[in-house]
Image (cartoon, rainbow, N blue to C red; front, side):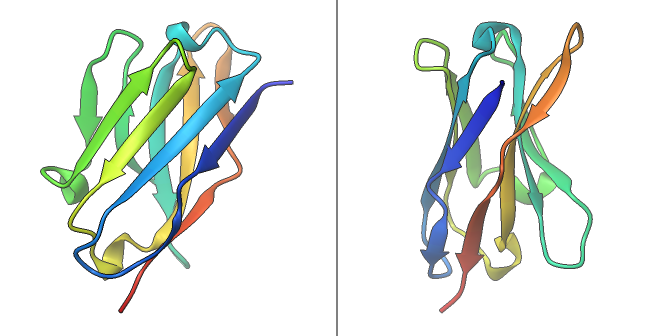
Length: 116
């Protein structure tokens, strides 16, 4: 069974930083496009950032200049470095793995709370 396990969430003050990690198992990780999504309370899930299997990155406007997505295929892990965090970044952050030949998979989510 495919597993995506996120970690690194928590409580941080405005202006602080967090680094999220998502480690995958039972997938050919290097073939997958990876993404981070978030869902704030009462809102729809939205894309935060994505990185393709060949390393092309894409960011939602909300995170441009503050967030950085990267991947380590040897470790089957995708990262999201989040800097200059704002209260509006508070959400559950989900890892997504997508490959057109097999579909996509989701992690269980990790809570990020930005508050003083």
